[in-house]
Length: 115
Length: 113
Image (cartoon, rainbow over all chains, first blue to last red; front, side, top):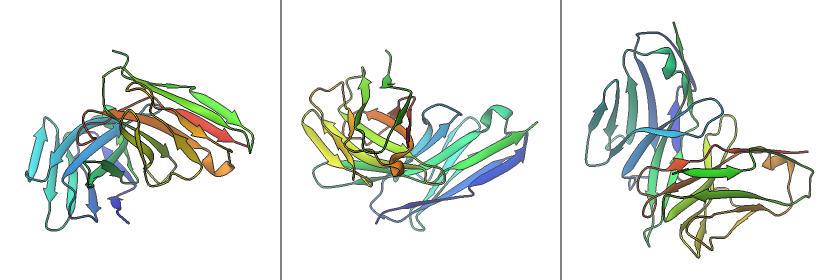
C-alpha cells in the first residue's frame, strides 16, 4: 500500500547548526506534502507545507524542498534553537475518486538541539 | 475559538470493555479524522469523515467505529477493547475534503489492561 518513509528517526545537533529531515513517498499521484511539529504532550501542529507545482518553499528559518521525479521531499531548519527540539512528521496526501483525501504520515524524527 | 477538543485526556480500560472517545471542533470544518500514534510508527489514520453522515475507513479501522451526525462532533467508539489498542489517539479537522492544513486536538492517552 501507500507509505511514507522518514529518515533519520533521531537527530541531535548543536544550537546554531542546520538540521535536515528526509522523506520519500510511494504514490506518484500525491500532490500535497505537509510537515508537522509535535511538542511533548501536545498534538501535531503544521509548520510548513508544499504542493506539487512548487519545488521549494521557505518560511524564515525553515524550508521544504520537493523532487517529484524522485518522490523525495525534505525539511531544512537553519540556525537551530533549543525550542526547535520536538518530533517532526512528514506526510503525503493521497487523493481518491469522489474527492476523499487521506494523509499518510512518516514515522517521525526526534530532533534534539543542544545549547 | 476552542479549536479541536478531545475528552477524556487519559483513560484506562480492561480488555473487553467498550468506550467512546469524544472529539469536537468549532471551526465549521467539513473534514474530520482520527489517528492513533504508536512509538516508531508515526500517526496512522483510523477513520475519517468528509461531512455529516459520510465516513470512510483509513489504514487501521479494525476494532473501531465512527459516526458523524453533526458537523461539530466525530466520536470514536472502541467496541471491545484489546491491549493492542493501547495508544495515543488524536482527532483532527480540516476545511473542505482534507486537502489542506489539519488541526489536531490535544490527544487521549488510552491504556488497555
